[in-house]
Length: 207
Image (cartoon, rainbow, N blue to C red; front, side, top):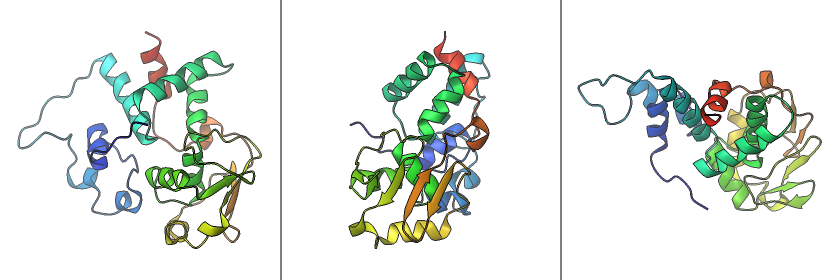
């Protein structure tokens, strides 16, 4: 599976917003977007950004893709599934991305970032409905219960992330004592706290 190994802060600077790719660092004064609020590659001179319709749509797509840590082909496959389903395509696309197991682990507060959650899932630290799952892209459904494996309940990474975790979204329920979480219901657009214009992504792929 192809994975991006470049500097994550570079991605945030390219999009001009915090994509929360490095957990607590993104919330501190060390955040690259705060220290260098201009795209990478620029030094003393400022280049004029393109304001074309295509560029605006492309930047929204890249922002969403990088936020969830997905490469182009996989992201396009998610879009095709959303387009073939009944409902608002943009909202369905976001819902599919939110229901990825790595994102669910991150939303529960078991990991400081989605990339950290992806590693925890790959290393077999979680079970879904009491079955071991090590696929970050696994689609969690309404009513599913995600638990930390017994052998992994002493991991400092998980406990440290829980201490710094913000409020869990209303569509999720987490038990910090048992280290388990439940998908109470499917998320609506208002439940997904990401600053992207998904309709622009739909327009880009619909050309």
